[in-house]
Length: 110
Image (cartoon, rainbow, N blue to C red; front, side):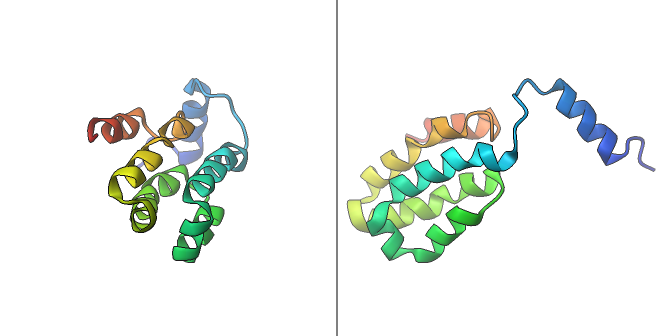
């Protein structure tokens, strides 16, 4: 038996959330732009499916985990070390969109 209906639970968490409420699509646009900028034209040519996914993913977690594919595509162009560095530079744009533990875990792997 459910004690709380999802709409009530979501409303309570929204009230307790310290973040500014905005349209999720608006919050993701700077992330998308930053990811596409890092991928660049060469990366887009190597992996057009990834470019398409980055443009249409609507979940911050999905964008976060797409970083692994970005490293793979950028490694073919720039080498693995530079690819990892470029993708890790995206971490600040995810602040407030993914749990802090994910961001900290990506920093500790350096």
